[in-house]
Amino acid sequence: MIIPHPLLGPCDAQEFTYLGDASLIARPDGMAEGAADAFHDYLYLRDNPAGLHRELWYHEQGDRSWLVVTRNTLTHEIVKAELARDVARAEGRGR
Amino acid sequence: MQAAMLGTGNQEHPMRYSGFRILKEALTGHKGWQPVWRRPDPKPSYDIVIVGGGGHGLATAHYLASNFGQTRVAVIEKGWIGGGNVGRNTTIIRSNYLLEGNEPFYEFSLKLWEGLEQDLNYNAMVSQRGILNLIHTDAQRDAYIRRGNAMILHGADAQYLSTDQIRREYPFLNFNDARFPIKGGLAQRRGGTVRHDAVAWGYARAADARGVDIIQNCEVTGFRIENGICLGVETSRGFIGAGKVGVAVAGSSSRVMAQAGLRLPIESHVLQAFVSEGLKPVMPGVITFGAGHFYCSQSDKGGLVFGGDIDGYNSYAQRGNLPVVEDVAEGAMALIPGLGRVRLLRMWGGVMDMSMDGSPIIDRTPIEGLYFNGGWCYGGFKATPASGWCFAHLLSTDTPHPTATAYRLDRFRKGLMIDEKGMGAQPNLH
Ligand SMILES: Cc1cc2nc3c(=O)[nH]c(=O)nc-3n(C[C@H](O)[C@H](O)[C@H](O)COP(=O)(O)OP(=O)(O)OC[C@H]3O[C@@H](n4cnc5c(N)ncnc54)[C@H](O)[C@@H]3O)c2cc1C
Image (cartoon, rainbow over all chains, first blue to last red; front, side, top):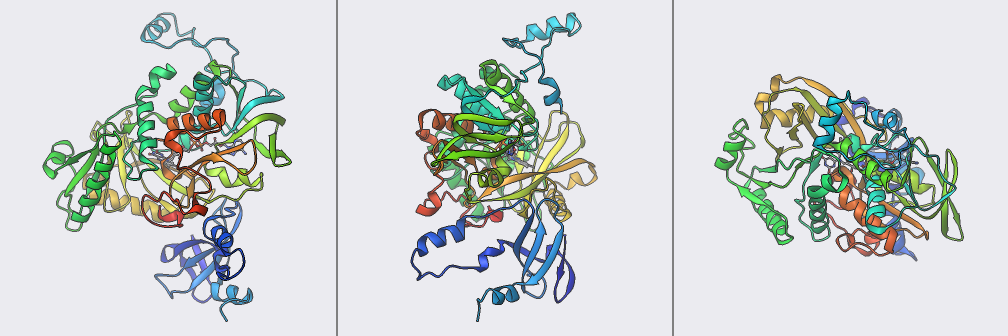
């Protein structure tokens, strides 16, 4: 698989390590009401869709950035790659 | 394909297979063989409906009928039975686990394999040719000896082999590799291989003979749930009512359970397997490389059957990518340099239900009447008999089988993970 890195252009997926569903960006607030349940769901439960999946890849052998890659799990086709930093900021995280 | 074609006739009692029968058929032009199971239309309702005609679903149906007297049972399969992972795996059976929650279950399974062919009257080619996990460092030796002791404590067999002992059985291994010298091995002599399709067919035939309806080419598309109670399944052939529904769909677990509104502690990943051209007998048992991802055995047809690690990203594609092919080839060459000239005949992938702690789930769900069996990762073939038995036990008695009490769906919430590798909630590392 070739990941279209937003800064570096096409990169072999072998340069990356895979973490999983990009919803892992949305870490719950540990101080909030119901945090134990929220963390259980966050840590252990997955949508695991057949089709488009937004997922976190780390460019370990490259520029060490985290990417959010949108990929089709039925075909392995990669539709989009964004810097995870930008995605997180757009979600109001990582000020 | 063959399985689907075989499933036609409508006989009452299937013939018994025996040496005498083969001789008789050989002398009478093989005209007496009959289809191995019926091809019934779905009835309006059953006591128990099993979703998924893989090894686990069919084994569950067999034990429901044979051990628990349940005969109003159907297995609903979207394709043909045996077309999923039960027909795609590398056929290794073993019970070399470390943890309390796992080892008794897998040892129960190995014992069931040992009596399977008599139980089913079907030649599943159960071959206890042994499995050998190679050791390459002193720390690994400590870990494997600890594992061996845990196995022995649970009544399984385990044996530590020195380099000299291994040399006698596997002289062709690369003992003195500069980076990964072989320092010993943990052997389980009762481990081995089984003809995977024959497991699906044998269970199907035995279940069918006891009246279980095996309904192929019928996809479950939803569950009818009213007031928190599951009343049956919606299928491509209409609604089928059920007292209880047991889901055993392996790689499709998340997709199917999502139809009941449940999210699972599971990711689907692809695992690849490889078969070489046929060779004369070279590989007496199953070997696993302890310093990389490579394991190998030889089929009775002569092909080397081998594989390595999962590709490591979510996938439903039933095929993998080249980096893992290269990784497996490197592992093969590091361990068995003599394999370099062997040609690859075919390779394929299967979709696995990788759970968050690497261990399976056999449990009730929050929806009454809906039961779940899944999370088998890359090791569910060896579990087939015990999984079927324990799932049948749960479906019939509403209590878990003693060897499967740890396989709870809520164990992640309670901190009761069964994490053999100590990797945490990261499915691609298990
Ligand atoms: C390459 C590879 C190598 C492996 N090697 C080993 C090994 O050496 N040893 C070992 O122990 N394990 C191994 N495994 C794992 C093992 O094959 C699986 O864990 C096990 O087969 C899963 O259980 P099953 O047989 O019931 O699954 P499957 O055969 O996949 O059965 C599930 C069935 O559910 C059906 N289904 C799905 N959705 C629906 C629906 N909506 N309606 C109706 N039916 C549906 C599917 O069509 C399928 O037939 C390997 C797996 C792979 C892919």
